[in-house]
Image 1 (spheres, rainbow, N blue to C red):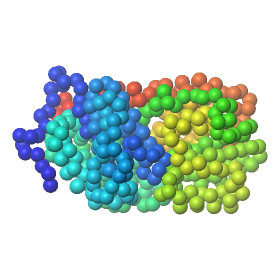
Image 2: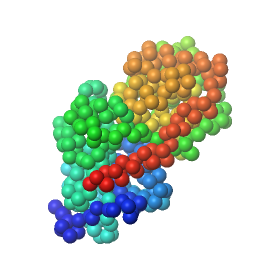
Image 3: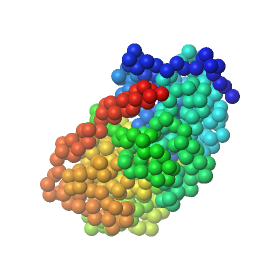
Image 4: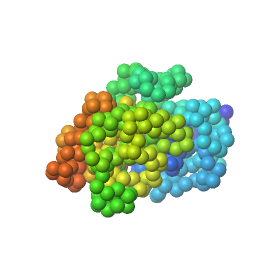
Length: 420
C-alpha cells in the first residue's frame, strides 16, 4: 500500500491567497470520453466532462482519473483549458463489468498516487463520482489529508427497492453507507435524492448540498425540423424519441406498450437511441416484444449516436419520452428541451423542477402504458393545432447551463476547504 510520509502530505490552502483550486476528480469505472449510450457510459460521464470543462474555463485545474479500458486510447486526453482525463491501468486494459472493477480498486488507488508523485502534483480536494470511485476517493483522502466530496449519481438501495433489473450486491450498499458516513460533503442532484440519502443511508442532511445537473446550450439547440427530418430520412411522420442506455430500469418496454395504444395515429415512428454489444440481450428482448405487439415496423433501434449528432434527432422528433423507473436526474430531458422538443416523463429525478405541464411537456405518475400513451397523444395533437414555440420550450432550461452549475459548485468546494 502506498502512503505519504507526514512531510509529503498536502498543506491546506489559504483561500485568501489562492483562488484557483486543484481538483482530483474520480470516475473509475466509466470513462468520461467513452461512447455515450453504452452499458456503463451515460449521464454521469456527461456531467463529469462538462463540469470539468467549466471549472477549467474559470482557471481551476481538474484532473479526471479513470481506468484504462482501451489499448488505443491515449493515456491523457485534454478536455479543454486546465481539464484533462488521465487513464490509469488497473487490471487488463479492456472493458470489464463494473462490479469486476471492485477487485482492482486498490491497484487503481496506488496507480493514482504514483502518477501524482511522479508528476509532482498537489490537489486541494477530491471529488468522486459513483460508489466505486468513492471507495478510491476515501482511500486517497486518507493518504493526502484533503477533503473528499462525493456524488453517487445512483444508489444501490433505491434500485433494489424498485426491483427492476439486476439486484445490486450487498457490497455496494455497505460501501455507500460507509461513504455517506466518512465523506466530507455529498452533492445530490435533487431534493428527492437528498431525502433518499437520509432515509436509506442515515445521511446527515447538513452534509448534503442539492445542485442540479446541466446542459450544453451551445451544442443542444433547435435545428430546422423539416431539414433535420430530411437528413434522417423521415417525411410526414409523427416521431417519438427515446435516448439513453438500453437497460430495464429505463422502462423502454412500457414505452413499446404505450406505442401499441397509439395505433390510430398515422405514420407513427419510435426511434430508440442507445445500446452497444453489451446491451444486445436487452435489445433483442425489446425487439421480440415489438413483434408480439405487432409494432415492429414502427420501431427503429438505432444503436449509439454520437453526442454531436443528437441535436439532429431531438429537433426532428415531435416528443421525447423518458419512461424510466429511476433516474438520478435525467439529462436527456434538458437536452431535448434545449432543442425545443417537448417531453413526456415519469416522476423521476429532476423532472418536477424541469417540466412545466402543458408548456414544455407532461409528467406522469408512473410508466403505465395508458398514461404514457395519453400524454404522448396530447403532445402530438398540440403539434398539429398550435405549433408550440420551440423558443419558449428552450427558454425553460436556460437556467440549467453548465456555467450556472459550475458557479454553484465552486462555493461548495471553497466552503469545505475553509472549514477543513
